[in-house]
Image: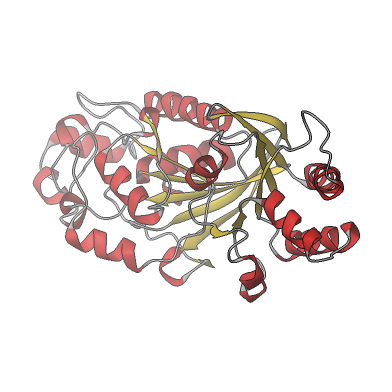
Length: 338
């Protein structure tokens, strides 16, 4: 539950709409229809102070109004209440106005005490005055959709390809978890995938999450490279040596882990976090966080993994996930191209 407060015409409604675009809006005009919403639905209740006024005028007691508000919070834990602050200034002469001011103030105190976040708007600028950090953050790793080069089994690293039509359709058919933060590589195929998966959220680009630079092998297939001595030597080392004129695994590791730390810092207050990144980035990150063979973490386009990160940085609960069928487990595909 969240509470947005502030004076009259300070930008509360616009902030609530921008911050919680997927929440269904209710105010004094349609509040009576709220009971129709299924439990768990994200809702945004605007003009709570006016709703309280109408209920007082209808003869409701403070306790009855409070019970209704608490019932909404129980049925819709992710709800957002938006209200004017009406407790400042001269004490009203009218008894109803005085009671309205006092009741609204006490109800807002109760809501603020139970909220995990309280934001005050002043001149359109949000000020966070209460924030509870989640004990555990849920991370969803998603490999970008297929590009033309992926479909042809080419090494696609620094080449900034867009999604293919096939890749776009596959992403649109998949079912991905709802997240309150979305991060992606700065490469086009990841940005496009993130925008398809979470159209209501602007993805935060992390350049350090970009794919490996394959150097001389970039854009080629196994068949085109199989007679190249440098490629055969690279295969014999199981990819542990640097790509000719490209990156080494250690170089990729250093920047990916730097990007990981930047992401954790920026998303410190978020609970469900999606990372739309590359196959090589996923393999690098998971082999470092969970150990095991680098190639054990290969994954198909549009699929990925999930795991939890505690507040002190301990990772646990790694699961391979198939988003094509919802949230079920899957086996790594062993796809060679990134």
